[in-house]
Length: 631
Image (cartoon, rainbow, N blue to C red; front, side):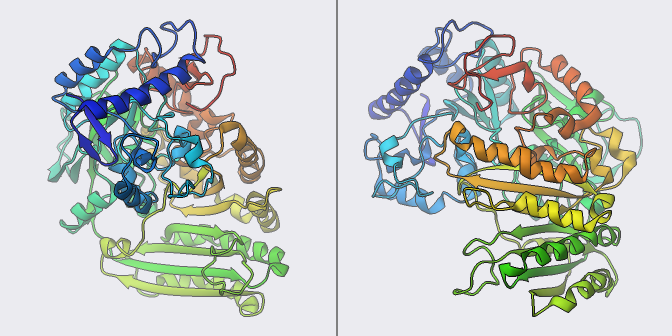
């Protein structure tokens, strides 16, 4: 029997559960069939097509998978009295968990940013308003939207192999999800089946590791990490060996999606990006074969996957990464708050002065994350309850294994520039703390809220020259990137001081070489109502691409962007994400996935397909009415 998934609790199929899924499937089929005609092998099969697998086909797949196939139902369906599985207690639990990454990771289809699935079933309060304050949510009802229709709870490589083969044979869109943390919604897809790797767990420590079939006698300390492991898992496990493994900054990020996009984190300036530290991985390729890739086996795949993006060349089931002794940490916590918006121009001038110091601080060993907080109520923690909201800049930067006094010396010139204005136009705090090891320092950081609204993200890698050449220009362009829009919204800017300048590694991985010349990755993020359709959100999306991101691009026109945090609607995405590497990546994609089994938005080879208004994928050569970018 195929499992029906109610919220976070799978149940065996019974008459009511089967009827419930049948209702979902009928509404899904009617919606898709109305927009689809003359479906051929030029398009992926979706419910409503004659090529869509039968119930017996899915049952046979479930038998092959030993009962690991799940008929997907949106977790918040329990909040809708119109749905057969309405459950007030379960709904209250979901309402309290909706903004947690852990909640979405533990569900077979849910994702951290549900707008990419068209937000078809948000949790609602008893008055019918959604948890993100759409007053009409209950009236709109609950549907499957662009969530996968089936999910495979993969716990073994064999589950992955059989699902890949079946999806290829049936011409079904295949999606991969570990945690669902993708900012660009790459772990969901209309009419798809998803391989959910969340329960593929394992961490194996190697005091001495050498890649399979590699002749060199050299060996290093390393760990082999299974596909379902997250950043917090590997940091915790490595700490038991008094070691660190390069990982991301957010606790709930899945390791596989993180490193395949490049992988920056709080350690990457010192120890390299995620891709620099991958020694070997196992991957199920689109033809259903289990392949080991390292410098000695399948080197083309080894190069492509390390930076070419997830959900593209296959399903990575495990990765072996280098480990290092855990360093001592010196942390600089810094906050700069504007006292009055009357001095907003001065604020941006001072922000430019601060950012112009980053190249020197980075050379001294500092790395970490900063945010420019817009003047909206509750955002700036230094505004009092009766104060009008103002801008603020806040960061947490680390230095590793540095002598006492190093960080204080590095930040002193910056603070001297701020001192004349401190207490009159601005207020700043600067604090240095010591930690005995990396895990102790990292474990003080919080988790990221997700599913709070619709949003898009864009980024630009900025060089030392772009930060120091013309500080007045830097101030004005940063102000333009974050400026208040006609509808009253602001953008959030983040500065990721995490670049690694080991140029000798640039050609060994497929991530953009622009990382090696960069000092920081600047992100600009703008939100919109998660009830928005694509067309309703388009003004915000276009503003992000053609105004806010354009301002950052003008600072470093020849640079690039980080795949995992880049604008998926950038018209020049191939070059911006990968530069000269894209042509080779495209060739490798065609070699390993000629059928186009794996597709995601603005991923390698994605230009070979388009999505029609329903979300069905069709080959780009196939004429489609009203083509859209979302799917």
